[in-house]
Every structure is written in structure tokens, then in C-alpha cells.
Amino acid sequence: MIYRDFEHFMSQKRLNRYLQACNGDKRKAMTLYRYNLRLAQELLTIVSCFEVSLRNAIDGILIPQFGNEWLKDSVSPGGMFTLPILHKTNRTITDALRKLRSQHTYSHSKLLAQMDFGMWKYMYSPVQYALTNQSLLDAFPFKQRSTPQLHINQSYIFNELDKINTLRNRIAHHEPLCFPTGQAVIDTAYVRREYQKILTLFQWMGIDGRSMLYGLDHVLKVCDNIDRL
Image 1 (tube, rainbow, N blue to C red):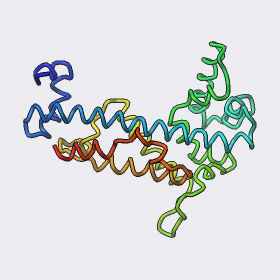
Image 2: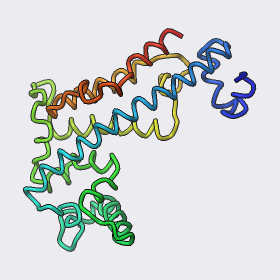
Image 3: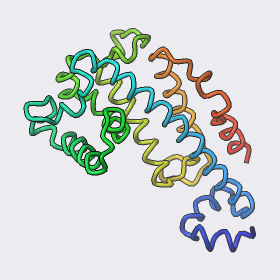
């Protein structure tokens, strides 16, 4: 496809940053745009695998404590997520529960699957973490030991998950991943850093991330291709 047609479909405003980063080389700008799309695809696969793994780990910790229907029960009268401060969490679960019931498709596993990444991130916020008996660090049995300089606690995990959630949202909103924020310079450092963060959290969960993602993970290869442009 010639650049003029590509620009027509993608919009001049959207492509200007790619064109600027490629010093006006239109063919390179189209290549960079396609590489960015490929990078988003690769990362979404990895984030999705991590999200499911985290969700299942949390579920495995909470079922023995609160029962097989803990998520549904959490928004029932007297449930642990009925506090006013947790109204957003409550609404997310309640809306999903109402939808599944209206479709006559409710099951605990389906309700879990309706929750987004933000739900699992906020399980490590202070209120949810306390209400779940401060047990959710057990999802990371092989985490790094804390030091006087670095505390690997619930707040640390929350912040790391928040960064992954931000990456997920950037992908969902079709934001460029190959540039530093607000700049038109090719740079894959952000992606490489977040990618390594996910692999580290997999490791802390006792999961061989590279083995799990074998044949699916080409993130570094795409980053290398971008850096060579």
C-alpha cells in the first residue's frame, strides 16, 4: 500500500509521530506502525496469560478461606465487599453477576472470567488485602526477599500490577508502544522493562514464563526489529 492510502485509513494525525520518528521516511513510518501493531499483539497475549494465572492463583487462595462461591458471596448482604468504600468493586461484581444470571449462565468460573485486570490489581489495595486475611501474597511464594531498601509487600505488588494494567490499557486504546511518552523517538525501553516485570512476577508465582509462552512470545524479536529501523 502506498503511504497516501495508508495515511487516509490511519489518519495523518496518527501517523505524523511515526513519520517524524523516521525522519520523514514514509516507507519506514509504515513499517514502524506495523511493528507497533505486532508488538501490541505480542504483549496482549502475554498480559492475558499473566492475568489468567494471577486470577487463578487468587481464587485458589480464597476458596479454602471463603468457600467455592466467594466472589458471589462477597457482594451478598454482609459480604466482605459490601463496605461503602468498595462501591466500585461491588458494582463491578454485581453487574457481572446480574448479566450472567439474566443469561442463565452463572457459574463461579464464569463470574471470575468477567472481572477485568483492575479487579485483580485492587485485590492488593489496602482494604481488599485486609479483608482477604492478608493472604494474597501467597500467590507469589517465590518472591524476592524484602531488604531495608526495598519492601516486597502488598503495596509493592499492587504498584507492579498497576504498571501492567497501564500497559494493558495502552494496548487496548491503540496507543504507540514504540515511543517514550509524548515523544517521537523510537525507543523500546518501556516495553522491555514491562515485559521483564511480567516474567519476574511469573517467576515469583512459581511459573516458568518462558516455557509457558513458548511459541507465543516474540516480544524481544519485535523490539529488536523496531530498534534497527
